[in-house]
Amino acid sequence: MSPDLERLIGRAVIDQKFRDELLKDPDAAIANSGLKLSDDEIKKVKAAAEARRVDSAGTNRNLDAAKGTQWG
Image (cartoon, rainbow, N blue to C red; front, side):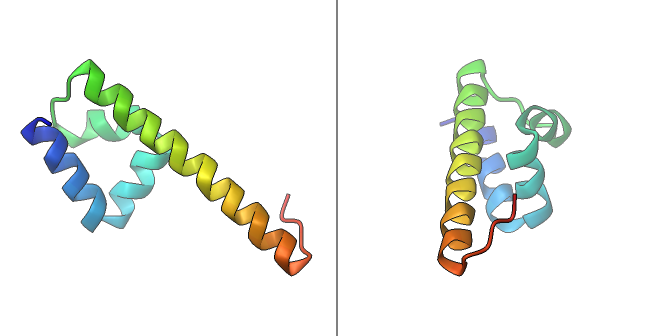
């Protein structure tokens, strides 16, 4: 793991706004961070963001079902 990837992960852990941007648009968040990631690291960050979005969507659907509410 490169030092810049470690910095990106650390920032995502402590900076909610950056984490939200990273999950929403990884390419823009990485570009705006000023950090230099390898192509492989960028692919991994994007895959992790996608997995988080899918997991969050499933979690939200499960919560909606439990409450008997559909949020669309």
